Length: 328
Image (cartoon, rainbow, N blue to C red; front, top):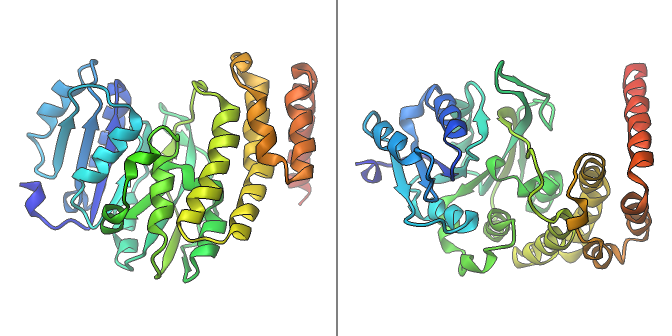
């Protein structure tokens, strides 16, 4: 039985009604070297698309694959908690069912985990095309391991990507110690709150710049973008970080920097491409940028500028940036 073995790593995949994506995710996972040395979990949120039948056959072929099926859809956050609860590996990675590991990922990951970090963050890239399989450049240039004795420096470098589930590798015993994890259900960032809570530990923290996976982007925004990336994200960094023992100044600096850069890009892309903008409430923005006057001005312009003008300005900005990159 898989639970009787000592695994260095569990890769747990929460899924719901995305069988075709899940098949690709598992295929790329099972093609990895040293795959027999890790535990694989699929936690199914009561899918109705044939996931159960597919997984029932798959688990017969490998003893390190375990399949759990919820009797009803308990929501994504509770399903994430199921993954944490079922994992027996020393470390656990929650892998999105639409995110695909790149060659040698498992082997590299096992090697890095031998350094016994408190927390590990993985470099990732965006998926351009599933067939043919094409992905873009990763977030960090591939320069090996970035090892930190300072958890503050690690968090500052990780920034907003503490929210990206498939790049977070947790030490399982530290996850078990986090009390009342259910309080984070409905925050959109339950994995991030748990990550920050585990970071009270002293030790080494690692960012591995090897490009581990190609992540599918969201094709549609099915939530209030302003609520999630202002109110919820602000609460995550300022309160979740404080619960993790980080100083308010460091947390405020992280929020400012990531909102000025990454969240600004989210808003521009959202306003230029999404049709359901009327459902997003601008009122969520202003309390979260009240103490950052330049952010307040920037986002007032971005959310009130006519979409046609904003699209034109964005096209000009992108072209100027390309010219600048060529000249340098």
